[in-house]
Length: 223
Image (cartoon, rainbow, N blue to C red; front, side):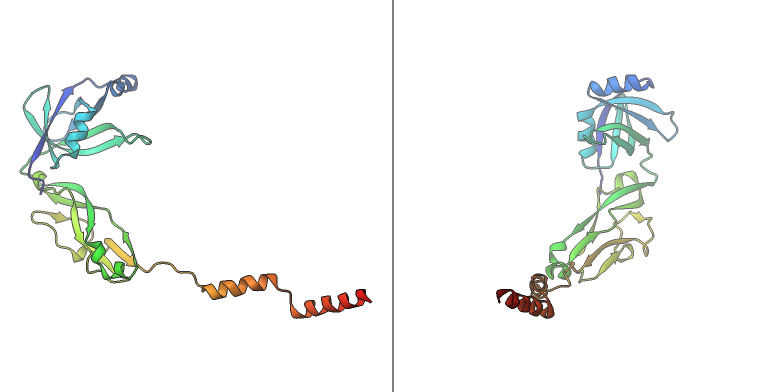
């Protein structure tokens, strides 16, 4: 479980127009907004490198320190990335009460797939659902939910109803309608090698009647 928080130092800023926001990004800062809870929305800026390290650290909760002030527990609600470079361009953080459960989205990780009989037989594993919506206390939100697929046979599927949620986690997606993974046979050609070779030979052959006519015509011209 994500039982620890990561401190994120940011600086308060005034809400700015697009020109000022672009200048902020060029200086290596990422604009963001903190909202929710009982406080007013607060615009802030944070060094891009500092933000990357904080988001990559273990734990869903960030201890947001604004201009060196006391920490405010918050979680990442949304982020905008550059469509080409993938850099974070804006973040929305949500204030949280560590004693109150919240909804969150966590990735699904398939494990032990190399051992699945369907994979050993040459089947293809499809990762159908890659994220799940959960409800948990902020500090109990896991980095991911692992699904063991080692027992999957060929043509098998695993639904959400087949897995047990970690302690303290409530799965909110439809358990019977949510397919997590499936294994299907590899696609094969309907023609065997012999059939393809025979067909190739036929392309270069003339019908027997046409071949006989050619032979007859050839004999007459020789006379």
